[in-house]
Image 1 (cartoon, rainbow, N blue to C red):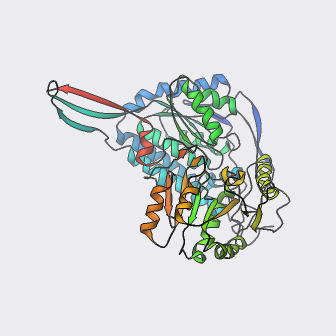
Image 2: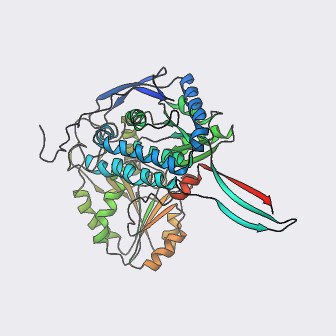
Length: 493
């Protein structure tokens, strides 16, 4: 039965039929390992896919390398037109990209429309298309020792990029990588998480429809063996990866064998700091609905709540209304705002953090207690308290709808606690004094710091982190430079 709030999408049950790889100009039947892809909200098998063989990985890299000289030789204006045309095709396919992502990731449709599709294409890919036009030449001017000379610094594309994405935002994470890489003049081999390969396989069809030159973008799928071959491939000049810090460390090691560069966007344990004097009644709901978004499966989830002791009790009271608004269930019901965990093993892991924290003396301060659906790998959101800052749930990335709250006595202690993890991806500072908020933001070791909630993820701003949160940056001019080599040209005058 269709509920009154269920999404009216005639393609609600649609999943891509594409099971072929894109190797240069041909769609190829995969010849490697086979596995099932599940809808995490229903536990149903929605596709059976086959990954690339070792030879097909080599073929994808060879196609990208063969295509590189001609693509790099195009003007920025020409590359921009190609990327905009690709964005046009993705926009027209939005009615299929949306159900593909909802059905293989489990993101509620009410969130996925913007966060998973529109933001990726309309904002980030379009920005990359425009960035392709920028002339980044720097004229250094004259230098007179030992003889008069002039110098330019030019930027040239790195070469072949292996773009390896995480499961939680399959289209966004791919565009963050290939958008900048293509704009810079690089060619790409795209490898998605094996948990969510369908949207990326569908991208192979859209790449061909957009008329991108042969070999400029290639699509393969596979497990750890395919990822390892790609990140250690001598034909790959740069590896861009989004995922866990453990896997990121292995990729860094694999790429090092070829002295290939890496861009790593890894985990986080991001703090949300509530300074004294803040009206917590106005912010509590926004804070809780933010960290629980996408089921908490976001690297920048602000799930470590550092709250000044003067407003701690009031904050807990205000937060109860946020938990009343959390609806866990069918991602196609527009009332739902918390979807499932991606797989049963991840559901077990998230629940293990909750149970382990309680066993260690922690407390469930706020919790959604409604019955979960009979099918699907769901976890009810929980706010944990009473844990020392050294506790596992406070220090490690949970990647689920679980937050921890820790009180602090003064602002300097808040800064110390904020920086007391191995990660440094993102942070938020809630304050009633922007000058003080900015002072705190300057001292928090994180790649992105929002003040009073900040705003949308800007395509022209860098994203990445300190410490175990990664290496390098994505997005904006900083993301572009990850795919460019710097060359100094000097001549006598």
